[in-house]
Image (cartoon, rainbow, N blue to C red; front, side, top):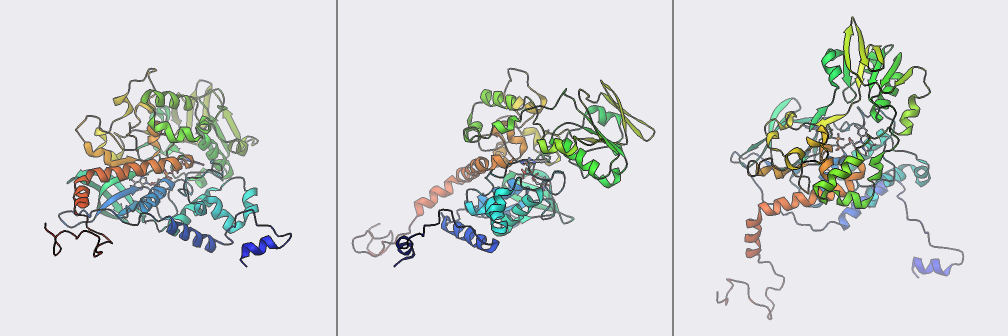
Length: 500
Ligand SMILES: Cc1cc2nc3c(=O)[nH]c(=O)nc-3n(C[C@H](O)[C@H](O)[C@H](O)COP(=O)(O)OP(=O)(O)OC[C@H]3O[C@@H](n4cnc5c(N)ncnc54)[C@H](O)[C@@H]3O)c2cc1C
């Protein structure tokens, strides 16, 4: 009698309706390995090796950036048997992305139920990782994923999936050389050249532009008197000091909270608008039709939708407001954009339409921009990259941020400004935040599920097209049959008795 028969035969015993949970991380890892093995089709790698004349190694794909986007891209490349690939990240292992540095918030803004990083493998979800260690009830009780936990999850996936990540390697410049890309990089203090046929930029929000500082601050204050919240801010040095925070997004509140919790005397937040926007329109984009289809809409449709979604900047989560709103050392000033700034002795003075504010230091939580022409990584090739302003005339004028966004092809590939000037640009796939206007949410956890799939189609297509003649030659030469030798079956060419 089988186990199943026994269950049905025994009164009062019912089949367990809930799925079996892994009882430990070891058990979960075994399950993941089995899933990977079961779904490991096709098995065959399909790349011709490319060498440089000097024998230097050429990667099929170099992924720049080892945050969650880069790791997911590396996992997908592995699944597609594009195995001669590597991920480069400037940070030491575990310090990729913002989670241990400039994300000064206790937990993610993304809800725990959002999936994508696991590429559809249930045992690789954050939920499975959490439940294997703490149990299903603890997961039900979990409100948010902490930043530490998210880092730990990404490190777990990287180890388990054996993703090829090289840390402490900063790419300074992308150049075109001998029909491929040369990446000038610094790895563990040494200059090195890395060659690649394709590049995936998963380098986060800052690599394709930089941080934005309001003109009034950059022009009026010496560099030591202000910083950006994405910098490595020395909060210990701000102990006992007065700080002005400019901006009203999530990072502004997170940094105000961190400053006060680190012992700052007081924080004055200067907000351009008369109030905090009510709606997070980014939330509206969380439906599969949008995430799946946005990149295929025509320019006018994408422009209109993106303009609506961006019509007010995303407000901070309520948790970020609650972190500071009851504190007597926190002061918020609406309708107070900085108009000018100056030093008076050691004191910073920021002038707004509603009066002056005095402090010891200014922290700008004013976001980042896409200024590809100015980004050091693109110093050599940036002038060729098409921007929205080159391809589209907006009916409503349009903001500088939108107009200077890269205008990408349907699979994240850069396009040329002038046709024929740099056709190889389509071999660089921009999987970073600056892709958002062209592709929809990119970089965010919620965009991974659809984005990685689309990215991979583009990368695979581009190789097959480039190597088309070799593939054609290969199918012509195909000569592998299990039927050889059977009396009913034709003889293989050139065998004894073959008339040809
Ligand atoms: C403070 C903050 C909080 C956020 N919270 C959320 C959230 O809760 N949920 C959500 O969905 N999104 C969030 N986002 C948006 C987005 O998910 C994150 O920015 C996320 O980190 C993007 O992942 P990524 O892998 O694309 O880039 P990153 O995580 O930024 O990783 C890019 C990596 O590339 C490296 N790199 C860059 N240039 C080079 C180079 N030239 N050479 C080598 N390495 C390089 C970087 O150092 C970095 O390690 C947040 C963003 C910020 C800034």
